[in-house]
Amino acid sequence: MNLENRVALVTGAGRGIGKAIALELAECGADIVFTNRTPALAEATRAEVESKGRRCLSFQADVGDREQVERMVAEALEAFSKIDILVNNAAITRDTLLMRMKPEDWSEVMRVNVDGMFYTTRAVVKPMIKQRYGRVINIASVVGFTGNAGQVNYSTAKSAVQGFTKSIARELGSRNVTCNAVAPGFIETDMTRKLTEAQQQAIVDQIPLGRIGSAEEIAKVVRFLASDDAAYINGETLHVNGGMY
Ligand code: NAP
Image (cartoon, rainbow, N blue to C red):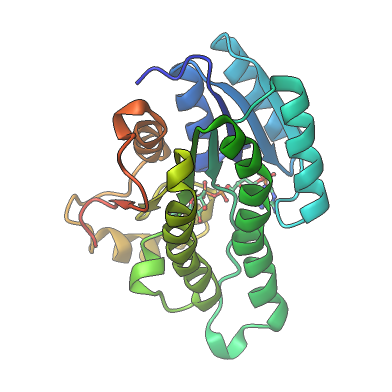
């Protein structure tokens, strides 16, 4: 799964799954461009990518802000000439029950998780179409398929990833730009560390493998989809959840 001479843009790679993806792609030879919001975390990811001998550019860009995304993509293209792989990973949660959910809990999750995926993909596919090569990989979630009490906003946004992925696959397949998704189950990151011990145990009880997954286990699947071994996979979602769905 050689990714030498490839350039990958990973959104939300300051920590968690995005960071693991950036490091995994760099390990296989790709140069990395990534976004997050927190400068200190960006510095750590950048140092680790560069320690693998790869070039790395980081941007403090909010994926839900169209202008910031377009500026970032233009600067990345100027620096690295191309983007071959896009991983739409950045996302947030604003969990609460529907009856308590404020309109801003809903709209902020849609802005970052759905608008962000749209802005970033739209900016990146233009050069991909031109070069007749691209891999778009969207990070979905098991709750986009099962739903989850307390996550009406987040699970709706994650369901949207499916329609987006399948439509891009149909639209851009003829240009050798594929679009696939990876749907993690419950993975140990800051997102799930927010849950109480009892909530975490209730989740583990539903997982046939009997444990929460690691960010690296998601990153390896993204690396596969980014590689030439996955050249004929298009419009697909790979579920990585220990068998819970
Ligand atoms: P995380 O630990 O909360 O990390 C989220 C990352 O996204 C951080 O780097 C964060 O930047 C960045 N980010 C958040 N909002 C952003 C914005 N507006 N613009 C740019 N970057 C932004 O999350 P995670 O658990 O690694 O989740 C990564 C992906 O996997 C998400 O799409 C999530 O929905 C999905 N997922 C996770 C799980 C799970 O169990 N963890 C399960 C299913 C799906 P800062 O560090 O600067 O805040």
